[in-house]
Length: 208
Ligand SMILES: Cc1cc2nc3c(=O)[nH]c(=O)nc-3n(C[C@H](O)[C@H](O)[C@H](O)COP(=O)(O)O)c2cc1C
Image (cartoon, rainbow, N blue to C red):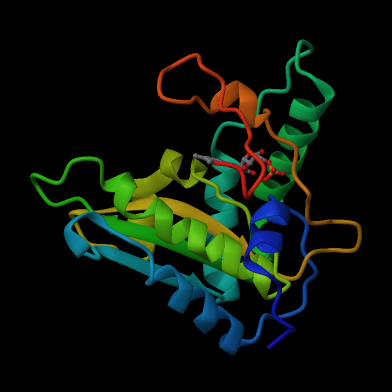
């Protein structure tokens, strides 16, 4: 296991990694990611999640073929350079998905009566992303497997009543694929104090 990093370093520097080294990922690390996943909360502690770890080359090749049948990302002239970079990287990942050493498909039961099943799987997905950062691995949350969900479910024997929530590529980051710090909209813009529109004012610790 690599040296541990601080929880907040992991949170502040976790970012979408879409370029990977071809090196295999030890099972021990994958198990650690999955252990992190199942510590997540879920509605009513139902834990209706399942995680399919896909390493088999032939299966990855077939998944790559499915991605090639889907629509491509549309790069529009009005996009910012940041948006364009993300879309190009996302397209690169889809074009090379079969070369990623491990794919984890996060699935969730969609029992009748369950509302918002996504709320009960994405916390687990986020735990995987953070754990990957902690272990020196890269990943990114992707959801575009939904375009060919039925074919994917058939290929992987996923039963009725189970949906695919995210496909996470997992591998060691390629040379030049770096973790954050990430840039986000500032807190003052998105966090309010007591009522909508009253910007959250940072209070230094020790002040009341
Ligand atoms: C619901 C959701 C769907 C996403 N789908 C994809 C995707 O299909 N492909 C991809 O490469 N990234 C996908 N992302 C990753 C976002 O693009 C990424 O989190 C965002 O660009 C922030 O970039 P950063 O991780 O570099 O900070 C998705 C993220 C979320 C939350």
